[in-house]
Image 1 (cartoon, rainbow, N blue to C red):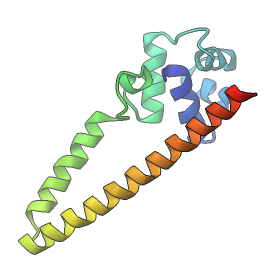
Image 2 (image 1 turned 60 degrees about the horizontal axis):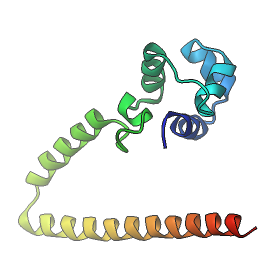
Image 3 (image 1 turned 120 degrees about the vertical axis):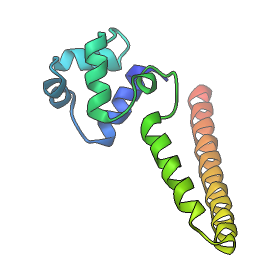
Image 4 (image 1 turned 30 degrees about the horizontal axis):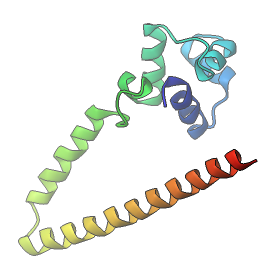
Length: 127
């Protein structure tokens, strides 16, 4: 997945049309369409504007990382560590157990999505 798919997903998450995004970042609707359909790449300045608007890194848009905003994520991690240190040892253990629970739910949901995606692809190939 590279800029086209990521851009389209981000735009859909915000429920914003191609023309609306074009106006916001100063390009035409046709340019947005070209970016999403991989027929043209945005220039560096446009890429920066897209990243800024969606609050993601340019590396995320380019597919170099799956982390949308590494700086924000690092800040969140620092805050978590700070708060974790304030807990009693018993509450630290409770929190770790709860995190394990959340991770297992996340793993289950990811596995379920992958299974559905694979079965959809297989059904398309059968036809």
